[in-house]
Structures are given as structure tokens and as C-alpha cells.
Image (cartoon, rainbow, N blue to C red; front, side):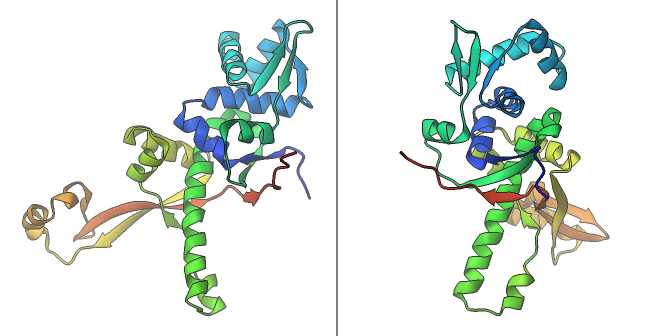
Length: 246
């Protein structure tokens, strides 16, 4: 059964908001979008209500983010009637030149966890993109349908790769993964590759393979190379309808 609280958010908007530090304004945009049919008036009492619903102590943050949304033209404002006009997703996609049709399913009741959702959506999308590429490769190699079914649902998402894609620091990329996991938008498994060396050979191995220095771990009386975490998306992804260009 369709849940009226679910909204399909274009994945490009999720990437954009993190890369451009636009998470808070986007959170406000989404909240206003869920509260109206595109037009809304906001007085002082409603500002306090919105701040409370977003888990914010001050209405100044709401006012600041409203200004940012108006500057980006994600929201319009008419000074004569005091109405705010919340643009639709298709309008935003055209405005920002987004092309991907994939969208992440968001429950508007979880608006306070929106920043963690954005992280989970982006990380989850990167994981499922790898799965789709592997499925295409399997088909091209004409393997059995059973081989396709046996593909793992966990795929590696490296912190450094995430940081590069989003143009953020590695420390922020790490926090995004932690926040998304804690909010249960993704599951994460540590990923190790057993090295065929003894513990007393580790120093020589590091000298020969300097790129492995920060990746080597001693566990279960063996030496291991720590690989990128494996991620299982817990967010559902769907394709939005193709935009009309007329």
C-alpha cells in the first residue's frame, strides 16, 4: 500500500546539497513541500512551529535558510501577498541541469533525520550503481540467471572515493557514513583481505608496499589489509517519470 508520507527525492538533489553544504536549506525546502501544495504563508508563530518540527531552537536558522532558498530560486516569494512558492522537483532539476532519473524514497515523518538520509541516499546510490554495473557485465558474459541472483547486496564504498565524488574532506565523508548507519539508512560491514605474511614480516611488507601502511591490521593472529567498507542500502530507489520539456 502506498504511504502518503513517502516522497521520491531526485538523487541529484541529494548529491548537490551535500557538495554545496546546502543540507539545512534543502531540509527546510522538503518540510515546506510536505506541508503545502506549492504555496504557503509563514507568520511568526508558524516560524516557531517549523523550527520545532525540524528540531531547531531558533527561528533565525529558518529565516536564514529561507533566504538561501529564495536566492537559489528553489522557493519564490511575493512581497505583495506574503506568499512563498515552493518550486517542484522538475523545476529544480532544470534549474540545476540535473539529468539522472533515479530517486530515493524518503519518509517525511523522518524530517529531523534528513541530513542522515541525504548521506544514506548518496552512499546507497553509489553501492547499487556498482551492483547494476556487475549485473550488466554478467548479462554481457551470458552467464546463468542463478549467477545474477547470487550477486552480493553489499558493495564497497571507500571513504576517499566518497570524499572525492562529493568534493568534501575525508573526515566529513567518514561522518556521513557513520550518521547514515546510525540512522539505519545503510548497513556497513568491515572488509578485510587476509595477507599471506607473518606478523614479524609486516615491517618489510610495509617498506615494499608503502600504500598499505595505514591499511594493515593484526587480528585473529593474522595480518590483514583493511579494504573499503561494504555497504548495504536500506533506502529504496526508484526511477521518476521522465520530465516534460514543454
